[in-house]
Amino acid sequence: MNGPSGWCLSPFRPGWTSSLPWKGVGPSRAVPEYQAGTTTARRWSSDGSVRVFSRRYRTLLFLFVPVFGCVLSIGPTSDMNGSKTAMRAAALVIFGAFALLGWRVLRLAIVVRPDWVVIRNLLATHRIDPASIDHFDSPHASQLRTGVRAVRADGQFISASAFAKMNRFERRDRGLYEAAELNSWLAETRLPTSTPVQLRPRQPMSGQAKWWWRWWLVFLAAETIFAVALVAGFVADPLTA
Image 1 (cartoon, rainbow, N blue to C red):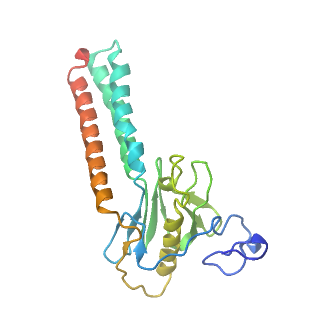
Image 2: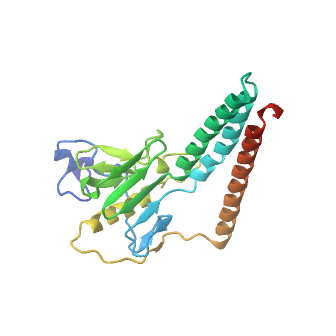
Image 3: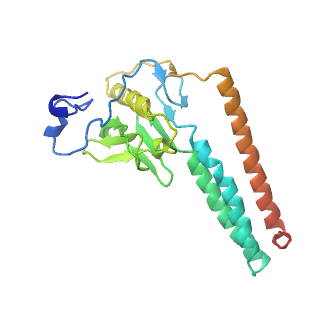
């Protein structure tokens, strides 16, 4: 919501944000109106109090993790002149690091419940008290630290890398509907009483889209199993690689 001279109104604080002692508080992009009863979350509880917001694009990033993990754990290690034990240890350490990276990629998300908000980023996980959050925002920029962010009451913010820009072909409304729903959820948590809500997807997947999504997950699982099998074979006998 915009005020005179382009000022922005904070969705949960009266008055103009320009009169506050900090900068950057208030949505930096026009946030669409939230449609009550709908959700953009990937998973949610039956009463709507717990919601997990993530993106399917993260699986595209995960696609490259088993490939690079397998190549880098076997290739350089097989050229080592050390003992079998050293080669095995090096391969396991490298592949283990990529396994951890793949796990973190798949876990990229924003998880909300009445008592806390968890932002799972690639390198760190942030747990935030909802009472300390002024609002959720979705700025538009080309840097990695973009997407949905939780703006605290003191103006500091934590960006969720789950909604950062991942490629040039993404929709321009990336994170906007999530921010609108998160702001609505935040307002609900501050009511004296909350009524359970039966949520429905804002944009349900078609039958064909579900079919392709399931096959994509099967492909990723097969790729991961194949990479693990190659590394396990190398660890079993490094000198035959």
